[in-house]
Amino acid sequence: MKRVMWAAVAAMLMASLAAAQQTQMPASPRGTAATQVGGKWVEEKPGAAPRYREGKWIVVDYGRPILRGRTGIFGKGAEYGKAISGGESVWRVGANQTTRMRTETPLVIGGKTLAAGEYSMFIELKEGAWTLILSTQPYQEKYDPNDKTKTFGGYNYDPKFDVARVPMRLQTIDLSVDQFTIGFINMTQQGGTLAMWWESQMASVDFTVGQ
Image (cartoon, rainbow, N blue to C red; front, top):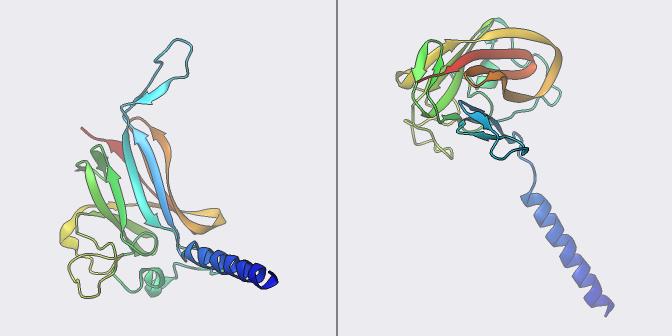
């Protein structure tokens, strides 16, 4: 009986260990920034809480790298941005797969009108001057080194697919953001600001809802 009991306990421990290994967090977890614009709050029934109707989604899916004790992550001078971009000409705006933005409504950003749809997002990093890039270049879900036409992160980036290149506002903040974060701030139903934070840097760009 004791042998059976210990065998059952051992089996349970092995199953728990396997489950823990399967649910182990990746080095750079995925993140999502999302907002809705262009809708309206409607009181459907007298006295009931109003509901938001006819809004259009804007969603950014990205990898979220973590400092893990590092400082000066962006570097300086001629080396600025090279460490986080892996030597590529653009940064993937996060980690792992190419960062993607999906919008259900046209957007005006940097004076360019983007049709509703999906775009890849990159940043050209220069000290004191970041440029947000939105691109229609095809991308890889999983990295294939033999595929030289689709992007994975910043790999294989080709500027001929760019649909917008927008200078970003940069500022140094009074705290250190451990995990790279993208978010929407100062939002109205007509537009707002796409912002990014990592370590002591904040970068942002304004946009409006197009027609």
